[in-house]
Every structure is written in structure tokens, then in C-alpha cells.
Length: 405
Image (tube, rainbow, N blue to C red; front, side):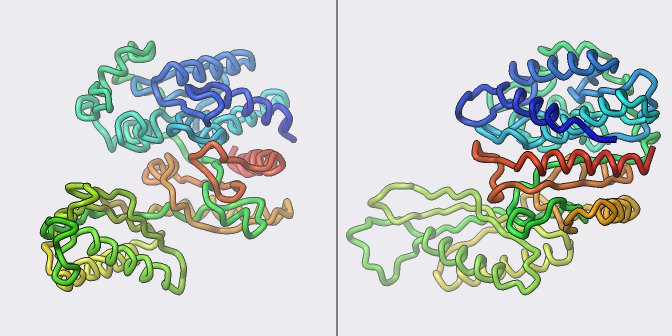
């Protein structure tokens, strides 16, 4: 069986127009007007192809043939970051829908169900993979009142404004105990496949991470009247530590760990005042938990030694932590077998970004597939993947799934 590649691309292009920022990338936050419009279009497409569409209390959307038992799940998300790309998340959803349509057109018996996870990006409440966290029980009902948007609304209040919130909260639309496998296909969001000329990425594991916050406290003073010698400049200390940490991580011989200083606050943030306090974050990610831990400990040592050298106060706070999550060995083996059979150039690789597949993998045998991102760009309007790679990836996913139905 062959998917309809032209239909796949056409659908993806149509959904790229459902955005709050036309001409400036795709902005489609969960529960927004744009999100509701995308959901409505998905529901229409499902109905046109003799499928049913349901939505649970948290906004996870389920599309399946009327007789499907839902033992195979596949899908992704339709929400985006602000001014994001046209493929992130939605590619996995439209790929799954295209496969369901192809099965229906060929009268192929199966038990596959498409799931559209809500609030994967965390753009509303600062919590990634929110829909899958509720689905798997990581989040309980109390989280509905604890998750608060930038506008000051709780998740419960936001959900109460949507049509699907009227469904019973305890109604189980998917019981993960009866699901035997979960698949997600996604654009890589990094440069590896594109740089190295691979068509398919088979994800070994989703990287774990540790995040810390560092506060350096020096002495503020007049920028012109204070000699350079003897200054206790908190920002210079932060800059020195940052460069040392970057050099340490870049020198790793295996090149399978990354570190990012993504937030920086300088006080009093005036051009003519020596910075008294600098607060910054450090995030470290790797597919090997022991390496993540060791690298973070080495970074903490650099941070403390820099503070001693600069004679300033240092406080380190642990902010977040998650373990690396491996994909199912049986599914990875099947994926490799199919890739070889189809003569596809593939690469086994880790995912530095988190995905709903990682949350599901703690409960269900899960596999994840990447297709190349041109120049590794993602979460930006320039995000793109060659059409032949989008079609190839969807066809490959269908070929893999047929091994499980």
C-alpha cells in the first residue's frame, strides 16, 4: 500500500495557514481560537473518511475508525510555540491521519487510533507534554488548579471555556493498559540527519536533563570611579564560568551531551553600575543519565571555583531533573529491519528534545521516528523539511505499523 503523498503535503500546507501570526511563522497555542479551528478541521477530515472523533476533558483528541479497538496509538500534537514552524507536531498528526485514510481506502483491517496530544509545547502553562501527563496519570486533577497561564487563568478555567470540557472528567476515552504500542513521527529539529544525508532517524532514547539556577552576588559600585583591580563583578564571574563550562562540554570525546545557559538576569542592569547580582540557568541533556549527572557536577565545580577566584558569593539551586527514556527495543529492531528492507538510509540517534512519546514510553512499548530538518532549524518560521522526506517518513511509518496490526 502507498500513501497519497500529494494529499499529505497539501494537508500540511493547509494547516500552516491556521495561525495567529500570518507571515511570521505558525502560532497556534492549545485552547486558542486557532487551536479550535485546527481541531474542527481535523474532525471534518475524520468524518469525511468514516471515522469518529472524541476529545477528553484535558483536550487530548482521539480519531479512529468506528470499529477500531485502539490497541495501536500514533500521533503527535498540533500546538506550537510563538512564531514557530509549519511542521513541528502537526506532521505527526497528519501522517497518522493519512495512514488511517490509506487503510480505509484499501479496506485494511487494523486497530489503530490517532491521538492529538494537548499542550505539548507548554506555551500556555509552562508545562510541556501536559496532555500526555494527564493521560498517563503523572498529573492528577489537582494540577488543573496549579497550572496557571501568563494571563493568570488556571488550566481548569481555560478548559471550562472550551466545548470539550463538558465531557465527564472521569470518562476514559483511552485506557493505556490495553494499548500494546505507541508511535510518533516528528521532524528532527536538529541538523544531524540533514548534515549527514540520512532519510530516517530511529530514536534510541529521549535525553534526560538537569537544570540548575546559579546566583552570583558581588558588590555594586560606580562604573567610572571603581578601578578594575579588586572589582567583585557578578556578571564577569558568570561570563567566565559560562565559557569554562562551554569548553568543558565541547571537549567531550563522545559528543553526546549538550549544555545551555538560556536565562540571564543582571542587577541593577544599568550601563554605569557594576553588576551586583547575576542570576543564570544551566541546562544539561544527555541520553545517558550517569553522564548528565557527572557533567552537571563538573559544571557546579567550575561555578564554585569561579566564585572563589572572583571573591563573590555563590548559590546553586536545583531546578528540574528528568531521566533519559529509552524507546522499546523490539520496536527499534523492527524499524531497523524495515529500513533495511526498503533500502532507506537511516541513523540510530537520541532525541535532545522532549516529546509525548517519551511520556508514553514509561507505560507503553513506544517507538519514535525522525525525518530531516533542513539546516536543523525548528521552532522558527524557517523550519522546513524536503517534501520527499516528509512523504518517505509517512510511508515508512505505515510500513512499520503494519508489522503490529
